[in-house]
Image (cartoon, rainbow, N blue to C red):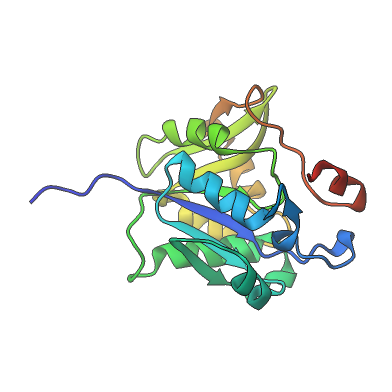
Length: 202
């Protein structure tokens, strides 16, 4: 009997309610004829992540009805209004579920960054070496998304994920262990946060 090859799961945080967008959930915004959640999930799959878990929150039922997310595991976060930390905790918990497909790491991506596509994700994914891996994309030397967490980090990340800070505190505490992968030549790390940002959507 041979060991199964390591699998890196995709973890897409798509639960936000778009408070600064007048309450328009970011997952349901359209970009180039498709929903943002579809773009982001497809980018993770194209980069080589399997499985892909998508954390839903605001108007989750509408996302389930409208979004085409083949092969994705949809994870409900009833505490989405508490901030990104709750979604990160929910997503990591879904990966640790005994019935979930085993994964040795998670590549975490945000639904509101359509300028980050499969090329950047694949670069970060390629830096994975073990369950101890801690890898992040960088843009002109500044750390950004996506971020890869080896399974050995999941419990610590979940414990530190509060409010809207997500994994920021955990990453700051483990800065020396992070492998940075420059992605500024293949991606743009802007967020869709305010009505002005909607001009970036085609």
